[in-house]
Image 1: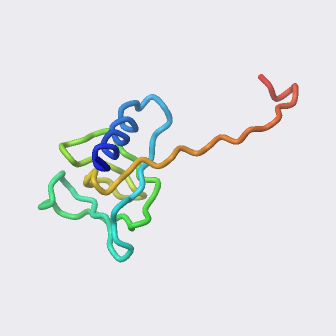
Image 2: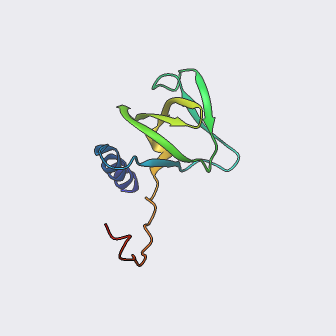
Length: 104
């Protein structure tokens, strides 16, 4: 059930690219491990970089291939397993009082 909910949340986050770009975070990775970023969407592909287990701000391109998603993290681009990434919560806007000249 948890995997279905994660997949549904991920699909919703990836569906609409017209809104602000959704970022992802690493999940289910041990503190002493890393998430491999691969050249192609297969476990046999060359590793082009890694993302730390607490990695955040991962930008998904929207391109998917089976259980793989193409991402950018800092200076790395490549494929990661969808099983290890999850949409980050969008930042919460802060309320404020607008002065008359600020309310346009």
